Length: 301
Image (tube, rainbow, N blue to C red; front, side, top):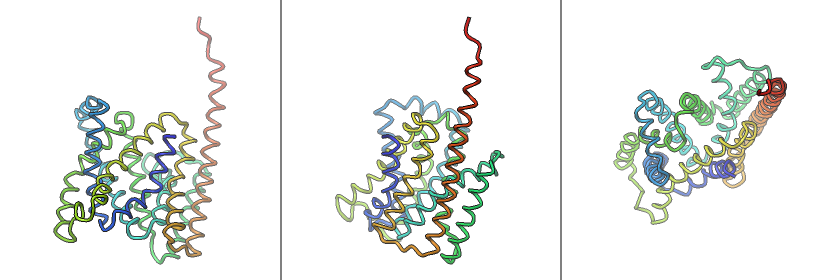
């Protein structure tokens, strides 16, 4: 239920951002940072999490790593909100479809992890898909690539401090680092296009405040789910979000799908099927290997 709720919210997030018009992507992201920080502060008071947060603040390396994570999630948020408010939800969904492939690729390049043959096949098929989409689109699908790589590097950075920083403390630190950027961004928006907060309607203002809630809540749901579910289950459920985003873009928003786009997406889905099958096989192999070890353990005297 936690995982389903998280991915359901993320899947329909484009509709939420579109409903915030006439607010532009830069204003939306600025309020998203500020109101997420406010929500996290309230949540910490309500749950008594301040001690854990204070302990993290006494570790400069962790704080700096979270600052880098904040930069990466800012790039991801800004790209995603721009995509959803400019009629490019389908390309945004592509970014999250290829994110698992990018994660494997980063594991090879950055962490020097060994990759199985089937994983290389999935990466190769994904590269072909990007080439097809580039030719069909007349240019690189930069929104999809920016989303996939920013979130991939974000996961890589978070992995370095994953055991030390819980979801609430992590989001609090990331948004705290981004607060000066958000303030400057609002000043620039105010001097150029004008700030819409409080100028449109009460419901519009409530919607902008709500971006903090709709950012933090699914992250907390996801953290709760990841502690309770096996990796394979989480691996399957993670595809709910891009599938829902794709459906929203094609069915509800009627975004155009050319033949080249269908072929490109089809290749990405083939790559994901290969990657998922490999993941299931690897987990089953590890479980089978673990059983004899457990059976051969000496009995306690």
